[in-house]
Amino acid sequence: MKNNTALSPQHLKYLKNKKKAAIAVHVARLGLLVVFLGVWELLAVTGAIDVFLTSSPSRVLETIVTMTTDGQLLKHVWASLYETVAGYVIGTVAGYLIAVALWWNVHVRKVFEPYLVVINSLPKIALGPLIILWAGTGKNSIIVMTVLISVVITAISLMNGFCETDKNKILLMQSMHATKLQTFTKLVAPANLPTLTATLKINVGMSWVGSIMGEYLVSREGLGYLLVYGSQTFRLDLVMSCTVLLCALAGVMYAIVAVAEKLLLKNKY
Amino acid sequence: MQDILIFENVRQVFYTDTQETVAIEDLSFAVKKGQFAAILGPSGCGKTTVLSLISRLIKPTSGQIKILSDNPNAVGYMLQHDHLFGWRTIEKNITLGLEILGKKSKEDYLYANTLMEKYGLGEFKTHYPNQLSGGMRQRTALIRTLATRPDILLLDEPFSALDYQTRLNVCEDVYSIIRKENKTAILVTHDISEAISLADVIFVLTARPSTLRATHVTGLQDIPSPLKRRESKDFSAQFQILYNYLNGGNK
Ligand SMILES: Nc1ncnc2c1ncn2[C@@H]1O[C@H](COP(=O)(O)OP(=O)(O)OP(=O)(O)O)[C@@H](O)[C@H]1O
Ligand SMILES: [Mg+2]
Image 1 (cartoon, rainbow over the protein chains, first blue to last red):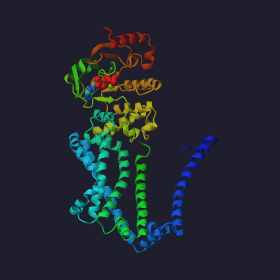
Image 2: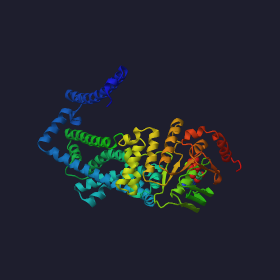
Image 3: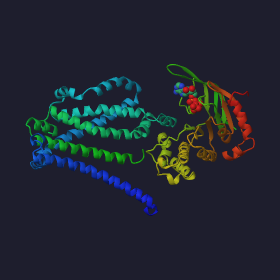
Image 4: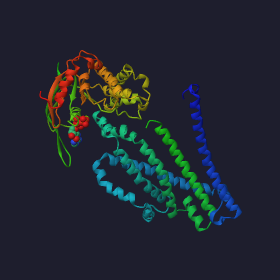
């Protein structure tokens, strides 16, 4: 950083105001959550809403604490997390490789394009019964579902990014006699790092959709299983707890990806 | 002096779904070793096509292009924009060509380093392109092209993206570097003053389908700087001659 002694009073005031505004945003964010939880709790305690249907923050907390102590929670969280992360990694890697193959050869790209569009539009949940028949009723089915949901969109958005690489930069590489592989590794791949990180962020949500939906269809464990079980047995405390946990898990996963993005891109792009 | 590049009856036709474009009709000219040549022509006449042909990015529809050099990487191409890669440091941008050629020898990297130091990029080595001014970026692009030691440098309107003031400075800069490194240069432009201020010989092209309208020798090679050339007394006379050529006057 530059030395602060050189800053004029006006400049200092500007920085101070900016900092104030940033703090205000943080306070408002936190405040919103506190108010929401507070009102919810208040309405529940006063009996204005039926806790049987809505649960309440204190009951959610209680549920989470009990389940943590008896080890149930960890088992279910672990199951969902495992499926989600496995699906996320496989889906992204496979999508990337497919995108590379499609970028590499125009003819292949043209042949596959309509199929990709159709597969992309297809609601993957429709394949649920097939997946269960083929991959069984275990975790594998759920991972397959998660992969299916993220792989196609990953392949399509990365392929588009690859194909839109600056034509003049490609020309530059060709004028230096670069091979196709060199053009990819030295230009197309690094130029599309922002596309990749954007896809990585989108895939966080996609993977959770995949794993929870998969667990709705078949499972003995996981947060999706708990959600279904909770609603069928009218245990709204359980349902709410799972929802809160899902929010937290997805949020943390997204935050990790966002930090990785910042590190990868720095201010070079 | 010896010819290094020869065009013999080159013809270039482009095909698209709806039309056939004859970009170059019948072009013959020769550039001598160490010369600074300019190709001057109206927009869209096929100047960039000439450079693509020289660098073998495209093959001529008919005719011959000869490059008289044993260097397999005889041609270095500097495009209109610098096209520096934002994710690479200045040093890494400059050694891109070496990486691609698989030239990993210490000597090659040493040479690239010498160029960087010699031309004032040493202190920016570890910087990224977005930390550099337009002029510095253009210089980096030139050094990147020089790093692979080409005999012939192709320059496709390398200053057109810069504002006027920067443009004059970068022009000085590029000219002096090319002269110091003893390269043959072929500059493409539609700017008459730029052509006179830089080149020893100017090939004027007609509008499309283009052929050679005239070869003009500036005779200014003893004046060591483009800015000084602009001040020389027959600059405006030469400008007039070239202007007439460009606008269809006779030879
Ligand atoms: N790959 C291509 N396919 C089809 N037509 C092309 C192709 N490349 C160039 N042309 C056509 O050939 C002609 C000459 O193009 P070129 O880019 O060489 O002109 P230029 O003199 O460099 O133009 P400018 O002054 O705009 O830079 C133009 O009419 C252009 O549309
Ligand atoms: Mg051009």
